[in-house]
Image (cartoon, rainbow, N blue to C red):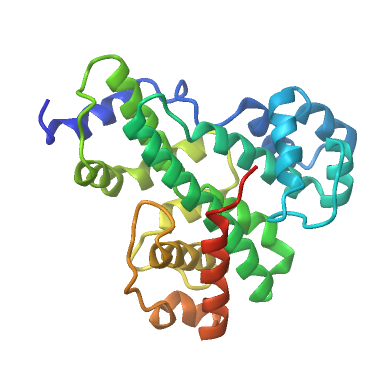
Length: 279
């Protein structure tokens, strides 16, 4: 199959089988819906999180890692909810499930997924750090989730390509340029559609829709943070895109957020450190 035909083949798969691709864990989605409805108790969150013991174990491992809690340890999901709050626990549930989703039996696709996870997870941690340092501590957990999922469309596309390869529709031989072309053409629209399909709040959908726009709303500080951290990841080479010559301080995002060279240097160090994080 020609390189020109591949993006259209992926489009057809996404149109015909949008729900079957394993992007979100059902338990993580259930927890997100509970939070969106503002109708839950600590015990209910813990009960739902424990429906999948593998996910619950991964959540506790992640919650107790230095990147999330430092020296404060929790032994149960209920204790985590009480100590961290429902939003952060649900963030960890989605992050833990996303970490598992970024894997493929196809070695080439697995390599893309692993780099994509490093980028998404690093973006989330960097965005939370930046929120705390830009006077937006109150919505830092929401900003974390927006950054974690900003490139979910890329994961969706990789899962679609994986299915096409398994079905023998396309060859398993593809190059970086073609994958990046597919991402550039489709990942925003597919990520936005995916988030709307699963009824994520509009603030997250808007970030996914607008995180690459040339003209964007500078009043939306959540969007500004996600856009800036995304660029910072490119600068330090965290993920599939490497742009070491990016002048971060000259961006509109840096101006909107009022961040200087010292903060940018600290953020870059944090992003580099996330590459070594293990759960």
